[in-house]
Image (tube, rainbow, N blue to C red; front, side, top):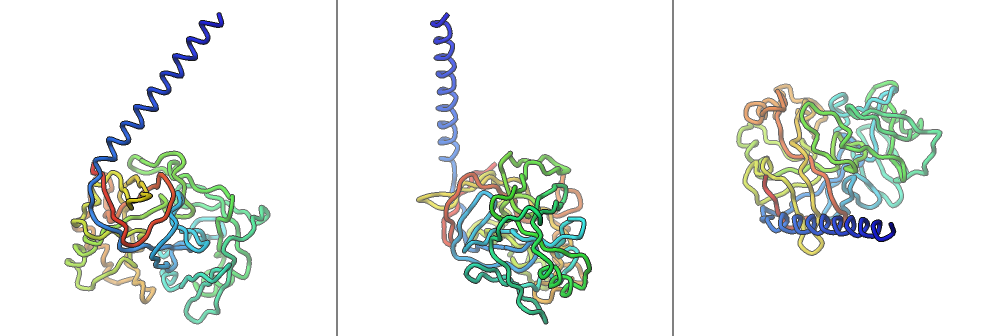
Amino acid sequence: MFDDKAHVLLALSAASLARWLASVWSSRVRRSRFVRVGEVSELNLFPVKSCQGIPLQKARAEVTGLESDGLHDRQWMLVRANGDFLSQRHYSRMALVRVSSHRGNIHLDAPEQPTLVLPKNPPVDKSRFMMTRVWGLRVLGMDCGDEAARWFQKYLEAEGVRLVVSSGSMPKKDSSEERKPWENPAQPGDMALFSDFGGYLVMNAASLNALNERLERKVTFRTFRPNIVISGCESFAEDCWDELRIGDTDPMFFRILDPCTRCILTTVNPDTGERNKDRQPLETLKQFRCFPPYGSDPIFGVNAALDNTGTIQVGDPVYALRK
C-alpha cells in the first residue's frame, strides 16, 4: 500500500514538473519573438481621477498602475452621494484641477480656490468606508472628509459631491470582474484603483500624429490621459500588439487587454475646462476608428495589465509581441 501511494505521488510530482518545464520553455520561446517597436517618450501619473496629471521621467510600475513619490495612479476619485463615480464626463471643469506632490501631502489647486492639502496615504479608518461604483464594478473607497467635499462642491457648484481615496491595504478593483459587451481579457489579479478598467493606458505618438493630420485644431495627449506613450512606432501599430516588454536589464512585461473606447470626455479642452462645441476630436475619431465589436465608440489607445513590478523611465526601449 505504501509503495503504491509513493508511486502515485512520484508520478504526480513528475507530471507537475513536466508541466512547469513546458510552461517555462513556452514562455521563453514566446518572449524571444519580441521585436523592438520604439521607446517610452512620456509617463503620466493621474493621482485624482479626471483631474490633471503629473508628467514623470521615471516611475515605479506596480500591478495597480504607476507610482511615484508615494502617489498612485487614480488613487482618489470624486463620487456622488450614492457612490457613483464622477469625471469630466459630468463636470468638465475637473480638467483645471492641478495636482502636485509635496512631501507627505498632495496639493490640489483650481481657479479661485484655496489650495486643498491632503495626506498622501491617510490611515485606514473603517468608519469612513463607503462603497463606490466605477462603471459596473463596486469598489471600496474611504471618504476624505467634509473639508475636501466642500472644496469640490464649491468649485464644481455641485451638491453632494464627495472625495474618496484608496489607501494602504484597502481592497482594490479586480479588472477581470468587469462586464463588457465584448470578451474581457483581464485575468484574476489584474488589479487597479479607480481607473475605468485596467491599471495602464498605453498610447502611440504616431497615432496621435495621424489624428492631428485630420484636425484643424490639434490636440495633445492631455486630451487622452495615457500613462505610457511610446514613440518610434508606425501609426496604430498598437492595434496588433499582444504583449509589450519595456526595458532591457529588468524589463517590465505588459499584456494588452483591449482597445480603449473613447467618449465625450475627449471633447473637453484641457486648457479651458470647457467642451468643444464641434465635439472634436471625437467626431473625427468616429470617422475612421470605429470597429466591431465596439459599436459607435471609436478606439484610440490600449488598456494593459502588468505581470511584474519594477522601474520604468522615459527612454526605455519598447518591444512588442504581435498578435
